[in-house]
Length: 179
Image (cartoon, rainbow, N blue to C red; front, side, top):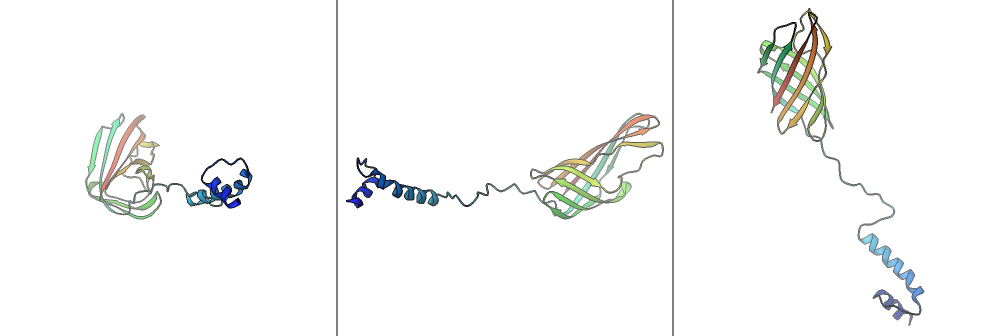
């Protein structure tokens, strides 16, 4: 008779008598269903994995340009189409390497940078100033380059400001790299 009542409880029949004897069985069945459906009271969920930061490792062809505006010096533009960016280390979004620009803008420097998983470059820093600074000028701001990686194209820009002969001069710098 108890076996019949247990079976009736499992198939959902309402029993006037003996329903308390079904509770332990239903509790066990409920726990089994919970565990078999992926639930667990003793393990934690890891959730979705974080997006991966794109790789910038490798050798890139570089183009550099600078446009100056403001008083104190004539407005001008510099285009330097030759150079190489070599990123030799990357850990997550942090990367480092070297840059060599050839031609009239000859320059060599170490590079460090930080990029997020969507390709936004929050810092791109050269270890030495790119381009000369006339003796009549002093630095007001030289912020790090910032920019974006889209596919195999990396573009970073920086707006620097200087005081030259008592007037502010702005230099908009752009480094474009492709691989």
